[in-house]
Image (cartoon, rainbow over all chains, first blue to last red; front, side, top):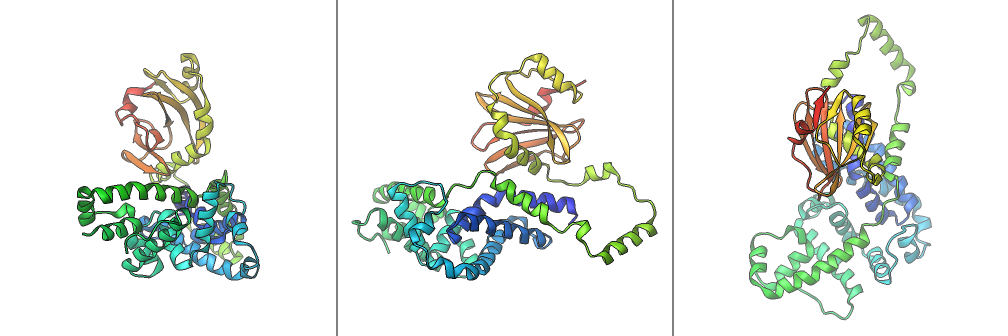
Length: 169
Length: 232
């Protein structure tokens, strides 16, 4: 790929996906500065391996996968500090967003969700991925994806309406 | 399909309801009420998860890589020596600007990026430009804008490595962006819809003409280009 074309393709990726990458990174890191660093590192790695991206339609999944891998490295590096922080502080740190009690409760519930439930939910809501795509990214079956999405949302709903009974399956 | 099966599918993937689930929903008042209630929860959840992105983040990410990528001067010296030898062997190297222009550059990305960068300022302009003001700036581009009222903003702007006449035009009461680019042109009409924007870029006798706006706006059709521009 020529340098000029590579630069334009890179700029397109940043233009179209940087917001989604940041939101996804923020929920994974729970820290604005770390999320910014993570997206920058993701984009740097994307730049270096842009020649390997053959199918432009899979750009988003490709970038999200790079981010997940980068986060795995960073998470190992930062873990000792993270476990000492209060969940409510971590989940809301520097986010400058909706600070209503309901939003706070939802954010905390999301932060407390097991990784296997939170991950498909973030990919669906932030990335706009279908169940098939999430299944592929998380390396699980479609039915497992749907079950995890269902349970994740049930847990979040219980925070808002704790008195309601179970719905469905 | 049973109601509980529908509810499971709808909660798990509300955007992917189809087939049996769709048929069930059409004939089930209970599930219709459920969908209404569930939609409110989904909206609330989405608004909480989709947190605000810091201002200028996109540009800082873009700049980070472009400023830190390996450049010619950071290449190993052996590679530079080999490149220099190759150039000497080939002889005089010329850059054919016309060839560069013919490459299939994603021109839509250039205009979208320009609007992301400069759109807020252009949309803030609230005073309609006079005919004289407009003529003065459009003459720099060798064009005359025909039947072109309702322009609030017109400025010569950098577009990629080139430049363009960036205008804000009131169309059906809504502001849309119009950009004439004398040096950049796609081979054929390009339509796009991403990053919250939609639009088109049409090749012209000289350069190209782009119209773009918010994805929810009605924008003029491609015939607008010929109706708008005259060559001096």
